[in-house]
Image (cartoon, rainbow, N blue to C red; front, top):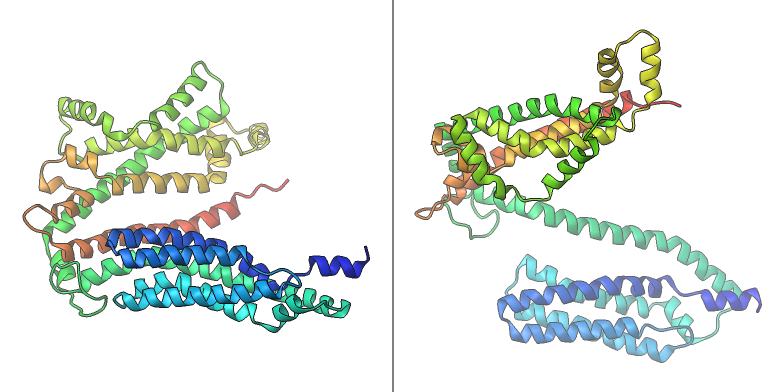
Length: 415
């Protein structure tokens, strides 16, 4: 077989190759979107949606091959039918951004299929035998356009992830700046700062904030004080019960925290630690300690032992080796562990609700939950307080991001 024949067999226009890949996720997403019609109990649109999925699957199965003009024409008809079904569904629904987005997963693939399958490269490829120079030009064109199509597809996927991530935040912010405490209404239809003023001018929010800071910082400091030497010991020393202890740490993480709620409560009551910061700090440290130890042990394992041996040859004792060699190299792991410990205590709700019965000892999660009761729902105040609570966490992530980069750069080991 000559090179020209091989090229004719393997050459497929980039439009057809792209449709073969893109129509599969479009079909899967349309299948998933049928659940929206089921939840809405919209039988007419459900039937149209099922028909659209069937036609979309038929289009993917019927994409043309070389010298198959008839299949190309059938694919064009199916593409037009997909666009019609999507448009009909869109017209029958109340106009909204969400409904427009839903139907775009039918309309846009149909329009792209119409444009690409009727393009000159596909028409020529399905209509007649191509010369060697034409195939070479087509392969060069595929190489140039394929990267552009891949970038477009990647950006579309990333934009969807961004929208899914950002939309709840936008919704919460809109509720926080809207007058009243209703959850409905259009986004951005009205603005008011009454909820933020009410939260910031009240005493309860600052009491909850102070309690959360005390408990979270205490948990972080006490947890690191215990987890750092424990992780180093498990990494460097062989002692009786070492493997059993590490397995026990893993085993503890397999059980939900709620099963230890009653024993915790009885212990705290016996020790007189209910409605106290110390009780929550001890409870959170015990809960987060196994994972912190495992994280630090894994990083200590990557620190070369030769560095410690060289430091001991220079006259350092074991404590100096640990503080002057191992800890500086372990700053990234310690930063991640500290962040995990802080956030675990900052966001925890169940233990704080159980151990604290006084409003003066509420942490932020419990305090926010008290805004939504069976007798009244202050959704606007709740949304405003939620935004204020999330700001320290966001700032903490920004701070630790820079810190982690600096720690990695300073702790690099050159061979």
